[in-house]
Each structure stands twice: as C-alpha cells, then as structure tokens.
Length: 125
Image (cartoon, rainbow, N blue to C red):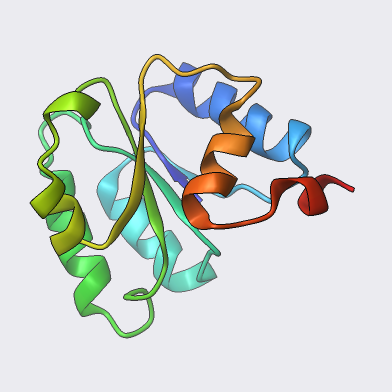
C-alpha cells in the first residue's frame, strides 16, 4: 500500500511497484484513508510519505502500531528529509527503512524489497 498526498508521486510509485515489479498496490492520498485501507486490506507493506502537509505521519504510525490488525505491517518511509530522521524514532515506530526523495524509479522496487527483506529477483520471475 502507498500513502502519499501528491498525485504525481503516487502515480510514479504505483507504476514502479505495480507495473514494473508486479505487486498489487493500493493507494491513499491521506493519512486517514491510509489507516482505513490498512485495516480493510491488511497489505503486506506500507510505503508512506513522511511529509504529508498538515498531518503528523508519526501519529499514523502510532495508530498502526497500537491496532492489532495493523501492528505488524512493515512500513517504508519516503522522505526528502531522510538524513534528518532520528534512528531512535525509526526503531520506536519499527520502520523497516527510509528511501530518500528524489528516488530512482527504476530501482525503487528493489530498494523497497531490500528494506523489507524480500528477495526481489524471485518476486519478478
């Protein structure tokens, strides 16, 4: 599942993960919609833009981690501020990893798979 408020980023990431990697990608343009989709669809992973305006994305992380239905879903962050994210916060919220923006669309599926501990080559065979 992908949560990002920017339509163009959602379209690019969805294309990369769905069309290039063959994964089924559910999208959400807000934290509220993302939380609802996470509960409804129980995705294998969530890719979350940490810089959604007017929203504290870590509040979403709190809600995900406190809900038994979503607490074990791995989360990968997309962030233009990746260098400034505190490693203690990443551990606290059990973040699988961070992909800095801008990212390379061609290598994005492999980056996500690596952070999640998935064997990307077997996923695309």
